[in-house]
Length: 412
Image (tube, rainbow, N blue to C red):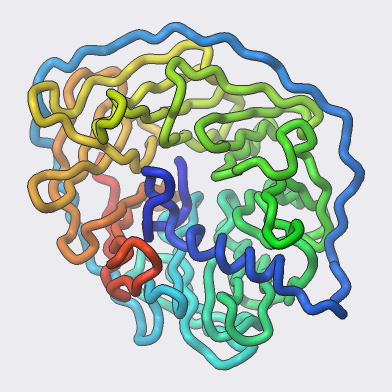
């Protein structure tokens, strides 16, 4: 799946994962705001020699819709109440769901300088337990590892001493992590962690792709051919093969050689505005869906998908084949091969599902009214999960309804 949090705002026309939008600013502050006397704990190795592999534009097969959506199984949303002081209040508290275990989520709340309280749920929000306080300032942002739900980063949001704290045991203990890099996203396979990082550069920051074999104490850069200031937006790792996929602004790149050689994923249409990736669990090619604006200046989107790393693509049937076409935001790609999207339905947002190979969508009901913003899908050993969150009230950092958090069992 793509995106391991909820949804807090929009970025270039697509929904940003909960926690990541806040983490970007928070970690920029951490990367740029280190005290002059601080000694960086992370060092980059010299750029490795690498090459890019050119790609050709693949053919696109168009799958025509056979009719408007039919009624599917309505999602039964359950309100995941959080303790007082936790939730999604912007600049103060944060919530992040584990991408690899939808039953697990972490939330950090307002604390005192140098001590940020953190809670965790392992039952989709039915109950919450307090773990050890993270040794960072009183405003926080959370990052949960994409593959290991016990690896988490809690970042100060610009209050107190600054910096980041890392836990590899689900919050039972923490290590303060200063240094020259801010951690935006991680994916851990065994003892190796891949990450999107931020690093100070002049008066701003650059994004880097790195890997660490020592618990995120030091980093090796693996993005020499992609450019040190590339606009990295998300990444995925195949734990069975070590293959790495990274999304940049409008494109995707993959490597099977630890960054020595990168190949661009061929897209059938230029200008993709959003991507979803099915998280692989075995030796398999990348399953990717890309969303495009149907016509210039129109917010209506078309979605094309590939199951062979971009060699062939199929344009999915339109959600509404008649007048009044909808703009869909992709939610997830479950293991059953279906595609989940959310789209406007009158004054509210609704959830839709397209079964694998189908030409007609299923309507799964409305999102909860007070979380009428974003929704995500995440697998788990106990059964796949859906989460729904509120969008930012003003689109620019305003406080969210702190307890507008809902979960549901994926019913298929």
